[in-house]
Length: 253
Length: 280
Image (cartoon, rainbow over all chains, first blue to last red; front, side, top):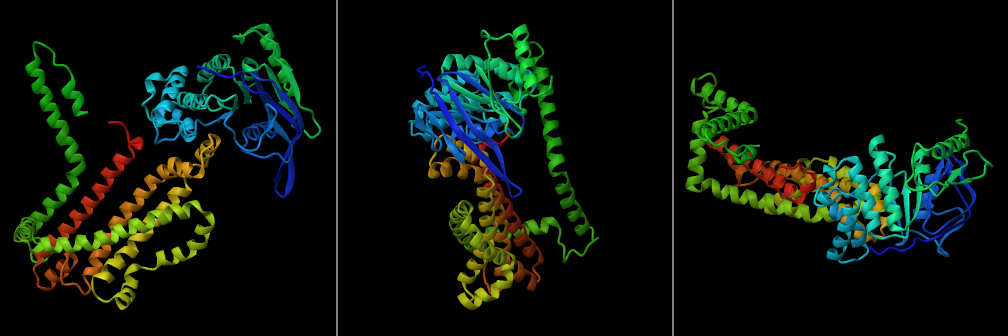
């Protein structure tokens, strides 16, 4: 299926704070970052470091206090058709079948049903659920439901795929299988992927670069290039040393 | 379950005996199911019948079941009760349909627009907590003792369960689903049509079933005051004239109407909400 090469994202002087108990709490402080077209950037950070906030700003679901984001040079203002979001929960509509859910994104954009369903079927097959196209969401396991959510996002053929801890709620075994699936999808679809996770191994398995957001005030965000051949071997010495490097960043090693 | 039994391929050779055994097992399973579901109801009716015909209770006040059934049959066959059923269904039906037409659109609107809901909620709570029966004399003064006041009091009482359930159905739609739809660029109208409305349907049905029950309740109450036809009138009238079996026949009809209305709504909900039903 046709796909673009992904879009590039530039983040300039981005700041965002929330009010907590009457006091402002800065979660992002003048962040500067360029995300390359077609790369897989994984954002990690302690809870409260603003990684989900950053993703939601990229998605257009939240506005920055100052600074901004541009995609292929165009400033982001709200949600856009070139971006799709995969949430931690599958967020399927229980009254639509798998096919209906996957076609939903295209249908709300005005694509005729037949055409939308045709493309939906392609992506349902891509995530390995061809036999379940007519199943209801309540009949699916957690991993299957999340794959439906992924297929729905892919069906609109975004240039940027934003993933907010998409595998966070899955059990360990399912999670590893899904990481492999995400790696495969990313390599096949040539999409720019920005993903938030708290799982360091997942970050190293998928990322071209890992962005570590600082927790404490005044700390600087750090970027780590993950220079490993794909598909990656979790037990390789260099994989393990990347993992130790990340752990050190969190003061855990 | 029964389907699986029938579709299981018969084993060649002793097929006939196996079939016989299957039929027996099926019959046994069916009777167990029937007993576990209706056993207590059947026992209740049997106890009634026996205690009345054996004279344990005053048969003039609690006539035996067969006498009630006979009175019911006579009333239906002669057509006297049919007229009552028709007028009662008309009163409850008009009121119920009017409540549906008003409450569902209003509830959908109020659930969507916070400011409207905030502004209307206090008066709704006051109206809801004021017994419709207490207001019936007011409606009689305003609308006279005819059909209008009867239909209106039923409408009034039916309106609130439906309205409040519709509002909460809309308000309780998962905001995460709304956000998901927004991410795909859905317009407000699309979000309403594709997410809010289907999400509110189960709650609307809770309201419909409550309202149907309320409609029958208020129907009887209104027909007991200033009516000369209708099932509720028949209950009162038969009691005045000490036609106790006929009174019970009218009560049985009421119970039947309630059961039918509820079952109709349950079936409609099954059809509309196949997604929430366990697979058969």
